[in-house]
Image (tube, rainbow, N blue to C red; front, side):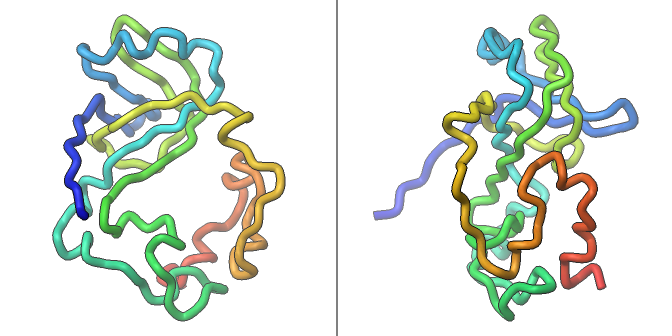
Length: 161
């Protein structure tokens, strides 16, 4: 049985010359209490620019990565084109202004105006796995978030050729 769910936007991503900011709406700002001291957050956000019936119907895609199989199921990718255009990003926290509802982050791979659905603190005991396995086609990708910034991601994507 399929069920539809109602989600409510709790804030907005701001990406610009001054960096990256998560603006939390006034009615949700009390939920930021206690986040001080966490170095990273998990941000759940909506790929609003690609939320169309056409994109939501996509279940497979042609080889998106250089070393991947010719076709991949969309759940084997981080593509924004998917049945539910949800995204999850781990972000380093630079500062939190509880009064203004602003969370300054080092980087987030979301566009200006992106709807934020939820914030969760990053906890190593629940968000990190010691023995991870990935397919051979992605085994050469960085193993750590911090190393991803130096990795040539553009060379990994087929469309970047």
